[in-house]
Image (cartoon, rainbow, N blue to C red; front, top):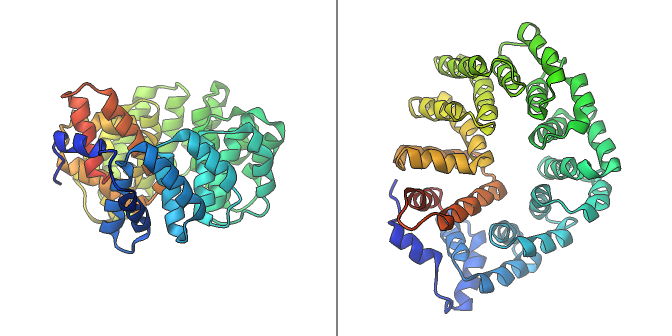
Length: 381
């Protein structure tokens, strides 16, 4: 994949403040184009417009644009440009009629909690049943519950009841945010075979309470084959023979690519590798990349999908790895493929913003700045 020369990217990142408002307005309108290339070019133009012009324009579009998809994309782009304005806008839009807009508002509140909004989040929960919106709302509640007793009780109850899809989201968020207040409920779920078990094992491992070691270790004998990589990753997080646990996850990953029939095990191994990578064990991330690059078909797809989740969780690790691999085009293409499969607009925008910050923080002419420029281009930011 072709990369921008650094000097060209610098020129694009600092567009002249004389850019005509009509051009910016047209770019915002084009965010809703049916043509992917047009939408992508429009987003790139908007990101590179002067902040004094683009922030109010995106706020207006997020609030009032006639095209509902443009409203969504405008709010996503605004979230990567101006935090203060995004916080103000999302406060107003958490009850918006547009499902996508509400989802972004909740996703923002997960990353930037506002205690004053907790009563509104709790009030929204009974009626927010969309399979796309409710997960974002419940993840925001998990964070809010750290300092709110009513929200804590609500989150605890959501671990134990409701559809598995939504329960899984809550359990994963509890682990991501190390919400130890819900550990008693997780311990009720972890012995139960089924789709929630792996997420619960991971959440308990991420919380890091060493008193849970025996519960997790017991699953080495009682748990299914597919859950064993996750069990090993959790035990590593609980400081149980971490080197051996990492080795087991990587070996399982390499074994599971041998046949399409092993894909359930492969998914478990990729998930476990992501858990380890998020805890600083970069060799697990490297193993996923190497295995994906050497694979094809359904096996590669499973690896690529899992890789995307790791990249979105760990933008600094993704940039560090891309730099260490000398901006290898095949790695860039793999990252891009994973984004295409996930289609997580908000999280992708936050990654782009993180990489842009890394670009400007790095010394001019440095390997880090060059890698950041190349990664931004490869991921079509």
